[in-house]
Every structure is written in C-alpha cells, then in structure tokens.
Length: 218
Length: 85
Image 1: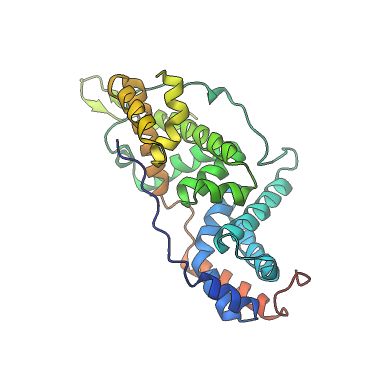
Image 2: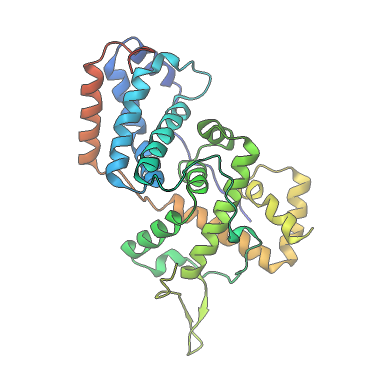
C-alpha cells in the first residue's frame, strides 16, 4: 500500500533574506511573508476557532505579533513554524474566550471511547467523496473534524492538512514527538471511524451497491 | 503481529517513516488481516480527502483586505523589536 506523499512546500531559500530585510524595517519584505503564509494561517485559525470572524482576527493578530517580535526569531527553525506557533496560541486564546466554560488546552491527553480498536471495519465505496456534491461533502468534512477534541484536531490539521513534519508540529505546539504521534494516530482513526458512517459500502435492497447518504447522525 | 501492534505503527507506516524490517512485518500482517487492510486503506483515504478538501480557503477579497490592514499597521510601527508589541 502506497504511503501518503508529503505536500510539496514552496521554496524557503530566500525566506531568511526576507526575514532579515523585515527586521531592518522593510515592510515590503514582510508583506511577501504575509502573502506566502496568510492562507495557511487562516486555515489553521479557522480549524481551531471554528469561527470565521475569530479566524480573521487571528490572521491579523498573529502577523502583527510576528512583526513586532521578529528580533526574537533566531532562525533556528523555519519562519513558518515560528509563525504557526504564534497563530496557534492566538487561536487558542480566542477559543478560550469564546468558550470559557470549557478548558481548552493542547496539553490535555484526551481519552475518548473511540480510542480502542476501530469497531467498524466495513470497507468504503470506491471514490466515496464523489457520492456527495461539493456542498454536502464540505458539510460532512467540517462537522466531522469539528467533533474532534481541539488537541487532536490541531495536530491533524498541522500534520495532514498543512503538511508540517512531526518535528515541526511538535515545535509549533510545544509538545513532545511521542505526544504528536499519539494524537495524530488517534485523530486519524477517529476521523476515519466517523467518516465511515457516510462513506461505507452498503448493499441496496436490489443487491446493487449504494452509498450511505442520508445517514446524517453524528 | 497482533492487530493492536499493527495500529500502533500505522501512522509511521502511512507516513513512510519506518524501517524496512517493521515495514515487511506490517505488510505480512496486511496480507492476511482484512480488517487491518481496510482500516489502513480508509485511514489513508481520510487523510487524502481532508488534504484535498480545501476547507476554509481564504477568499481573494478578504485576503487583500487582511493583508492591507496588517501592512498598514506594521507601517505605523517602528522597526521590529522586542519592545514593540
């Protein structure tokens, strides 16, 4: 079985040059860094906060904070990893403000009932995503990932959606590498389990294969 | 290899960061354990579906507005420094 291919990232060879120029006060160089990473920061923020206005605020706040603290960036990690760390912290602060009744922490090692071996191992239909129109699929994917604990969701988004390495994810979230790996495995398995409700192969009454649409229970 | 041992290695296996001997053991297991094969295959599909989903893309008009706001605020600040936040 083929492995997951890593995302091809943009060249970062000139990144340090841009950072150095921005440190010297070249706003245009910083604008190039914003242009390079604003989409990523927005996606991460939206996944964590689950709120569009908050995600917009996080994009602004994270870049302004990064600009103000550029002199603290020593170049030992990639600028993007450093920026993600700032953005994740800003997004978590938003989430905590919005949901003060629920303690939100990336340190929590959430145990859920889905942590045991996957119960449902029914196979999926071929090309399951094609069984739904674009809007339905987006709704399924959004609701499914929103159901994960924030600490799992964030690791999954950084590793599997944004393509950060395990080491970069650990650094951005200030977690150990074993903690990242453990959360990633559980996030992947829980998402698989939940998506299976929509995508699994089923036999129709006439013996023909049909999909699981209509099963909207989460 | 037990199914639980297979699952523990699943993430490294899917990411392709695993030594040759463990990879061979996992693939031996996959060859006869249908459940683990399905879990592995559908987990891989899960990752690919999310990776390709383009959830939460930043629309161009919003992107421009945000970038303009950020850069105008940067421009009103002094050169970056530890005290300037």
